[in-house]
Image (cartoon, rainbow, N blue to C red; front, side):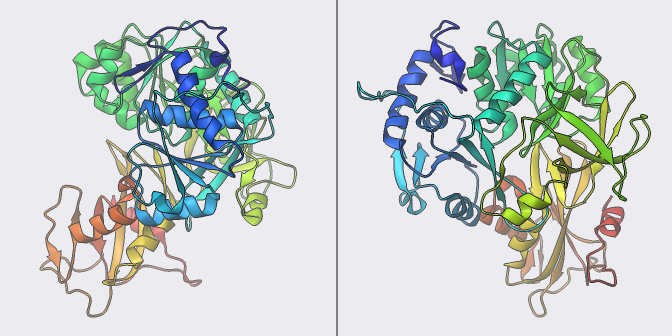
Length: 498
């Protein structure tokens, strides 16, 4: 099966080789259901998949890959504007999944049933490493999400490198409950199991109880998941028999690292990557696990640090520079955006991550933060501030908005919006004037400020974008601080919002 070698039968089979939210499938059953999807998908320009955490989603994604068709995972909580953008921009012709919208957003609906099987003459498409496997939409610092083109060869290289780093093989049981529309949950968390031959248990939701009950050897989570597990000692202790606890998608707070180590008897292993690069740096299973560090480059990947002047930054454990990467795991570019694709790479072919890092003499990497404040990492998601700002500005009571990520002990960063109310759109609530005027957060009172209230603005964004992109707090200001060029001084907003 090329990329998905576990479906070839070489690793054997079992009735519960794949379990998603309680639904168990053998690999033979998965191949049958996926083959039925592939048979109906062959020749399509793209297959969008409404990526709910279900076995049907896995069958749909695998079916698209077997058909040689680009698969476009769609977040199930995406609002109508975001979903319409992804479907239109990707060029997908089919929308697969369960519980599809009545009009399938203008695409041909392809309901998925685990009982379906292909006809006798069906065969998977010929393997082509250069063919686009996935189009994953990633939030940039401005505007709508961009589609990152990930070829089969990059997925294979990335998963093989992680199998080497983590000693990941068919004897493992992988457990996680992460979303099935990004790199961590889908590429590592599903396709990784179907390449290494490990058993997979997806818990539906990443709850401490679900992780504790799964009895896995290898666990994936984002910092929000691990912080909640660390807060429930009984659940955390159930993970003591696992051999590797992997954290990624955002920095793991040191107190959570230490708490997990104390409760489980082992330190978690952090890793680093992006949608465009897959996982490029990882803590090895047989290596040192340091709090605040993400490990060393995986097999085939090279990294370097570059200063603002374009000169190399030494790997001395102290000097800070922009992290740039090169290797076989990189994407082919942004769909339909040649200028953005060109801007993402240096003249000598290195990918600009936009992250600031420190590299030690021993090769260990530590991510310091974003070169820009406009990409927010919240609960394992990467959220583009510009997209949230654009949604807020669509509200008739909003004249302007700026969005930043403020440190949060649970989410890593919380989305906070600074809003200038339109003339006549709203008045001030008592005591809410100036830069400190707040209209609450996720647990606020929801009190109205004139005709614009906290809950109204939060819900307005949640309806138009994914729910996880909504502001957790809204601050009303008379104006936004700007420099002489008219650029909002977000560092100033961040300093005021801490």
